[in-house]
Every structure is written in C-alpha cells, then in structure tokens.
Image (tube, rainbow, N blue to C red; front, top):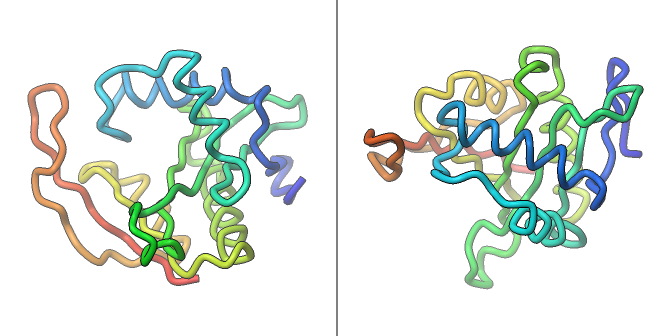
Length: 169
C-alpha cells in the first residue's frame, strides 16, 4: 500500500485489477472525450497494458474499504528515443460515480511522488480540450499549461485540440 486518503487506499496495480480498470477505461472511451480511442479495449488488450505497467513505468489504483477499484493512474514513456527516458506521460481515470470526490487528486499526487522517487524528472499530461475536470485536476496538482496541440485528435466526426501540461518533479 502506498497511502490511505479519506478512506481510499492507493496501492500498486495488480493483475486482478485488470477487469475493473478496463471497465473504467472503456467507459471513458464510450462516454466522452477523456481519451480519443474509438474502440473499447478487449480483455486481452487491457491485460497486456496492465502487464506493461510494472517495474519502470508503474500504475496505481484507488480502492475503497471493500476493495472496489475507484480509479487508476499510470506513467508511460513520453517518447521512445533514449534522451527522453527521464520524462513520462501520465494517464488517470476515475469511475464516473466517484468524480469530484478527491480520488483523482489522491491518485495523481501519489503517481507524481512515485515517479519522482523512481528518478523521473518531469511528467507531461495531454488532456483533450473540453475535458475541464482533468485540466483543473492537473493544475491543482502543480501542472502548468505549456501548450496546445491544434486539431491533433479526431473522435465522433469532430476535431479536438489537446492541452499539454507539465509538472517538474
């Protein structure tokens, strides 16, 4: 366990979390613009994602006292070239029933602390313009807006800008 915040436990992602985190992710795919994926992940695809987030690029989950997964967050490589190895990109997803309850903030704060402890230098967030909750969350956790990628994403027949935020660790 990494921490307990307001009855929510933050702990490392485990393989047993694959299905509940896939459900949260796929809800974001289907319901809005939190990500620009067009298709929900299969169980096999998501398990591969889970298996890729141990070791140097970890993921964490927030669970309630019953062990129900409320959300998850991860760091991933920012770019493949070796000069970027000390920079990571974050992903954070919270179950729709738990938005606005501090779960996202607890996850993001612990993820940044973990990334710093692992020797990463900076975290980049790419947030779809219009996802005001995620932008506000990142800014509340010390991220600064550093740019806008214009019309780099497309979903449901619409172009989307992506807001780029950064936090130095």
